[in-house]
Length: 142
Picture 1 (cartoon, rainbow, N blue to C red):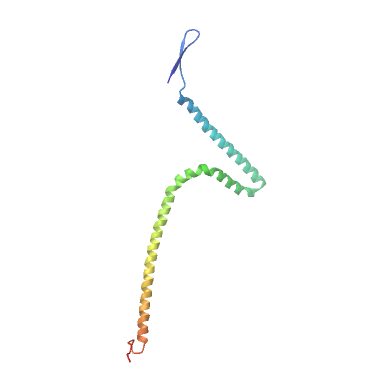
Picture 2 (picture 1 turned 90 degrees about the horizontal axis):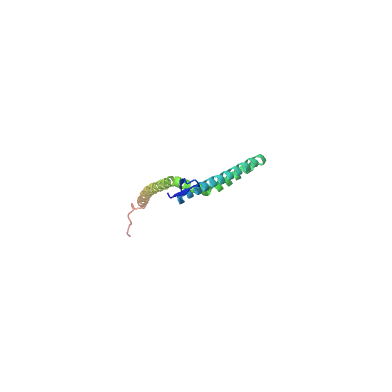
């Protein structure tokens, strides 16, 4: 850090540290965070006071106010919620895909069994109708 040496009227010298750019930037960042927090607190207090007044006059307005507060907070909260929910969402999609594949496989097996039963029934009816014909199912050539 650069130093500033200055002499006083009685001849004594003082060694003072000059502020650097980093040291000057730190209070600004802290000031921005403080201003942001103060702004949030102002909004929260305003919403709280309006909520109490609305509850005193008309209780039916409370659900609408809750929706409004949620809409106000959504842009800040959604990115955080999205990163937290993403693994669960991926797991749910994978699970649904696997269930779909198993259901498709089970349906294909059931369909095959139904086709087998229909083919057996058709074969039995075909054999029964041939035996019901006069002459035992053999065509007579006259």
